[in-house]
Length: 386
Length: 81
Image 1 (cartoon, rainbow over the protein chains, first blue to last red):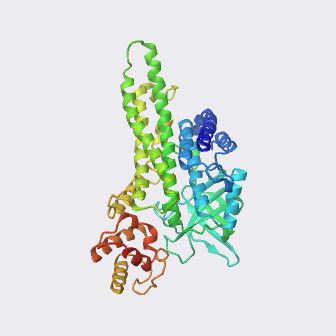
Image 2: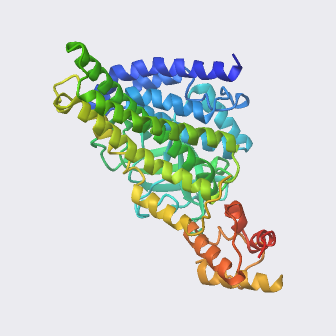
């Protein structure tokens, strides 16, 4: 066995153990809209929070494909745990690939050593959901420090995070699109909650709105412009790992449908229960979903961090749209297999949680916005392939 | 080359939505710092293709191609008309 294969099975075995913890608390996390603390402790304890980092930064040289598999395993048990893991890894990718100054490298090493959880504040009230524009600006004090104040409609797991990567205009005179990404440590942050998070699904991500005030050193501003960080790293990684999370939700619902059909078959030996045909149809879609996510993750690993072409950016965008529709389709099909028992909140076969979670997928960065951006790219895309 | 640079400046002035006049900026001025956004870049690409009667291949449609007037000019020099 090569070390890579060993690493994969280690990561998956660790993810499996964390997923068992996540499964134990998933209903309570959903019901109470609380942070999945036990599962995240298990994920941290297994070294998975920093596994993707290279060993020189304290990680285990894992790949995005492995992180996607871990996300799916977690998502099968608890969508909130998987989505928090996915969002954290998107920030890890930014630190790993775009934070190559001494102070930021030190910070990234601390993330690995101390098992820190990294969150993100990109959306802002007043920009209409367009994360590539900011109103707020970094205001330098002339002595190496800065202040920024951001009104964010959502920041996932902000209260539980140790670091938040925040977008802002480079300075007070910069254009709305001239953004930087700033690594703000908890001690440098003042978070005033302005909204509540009481949603249909993904309740355990704990994503209310905040007025965020950061006072820190300009050394914590990532040197690469955010525009480039977003296109090359944050957007592709986020879409791949969100899709892996939604695949996990779909797998979890399919698991339940499969168990249901087997139990029905046992009750009437010799006859194929009607749900089995529906289950076979579900598997047609599920196999395509799995292949699509795996292909995207492996292609990203193979691209080695090079600049994204128009074709790759279109791939990044349409993956998110595809996966967000596929998860709703598959959970709905699972519900059709299970029937009324899946509709009953009192039944152990209930599929309410995955159904509610699945419907968040098209809304978190709305598919309409992503399709509109893609439509613009299509105007100059010739469809050539790498 | 000079006429091509003029065309690039005219296209940027018409479609780039920059915060400065594209006719007056330096050849190495950072177009993204001047507010060039992705939607505007697409319009710039289409206008350049029309004006210069070329097809810009996908591998050149990356952010660094449009970082400055000089970068655009150097990238276009590699395109066959």
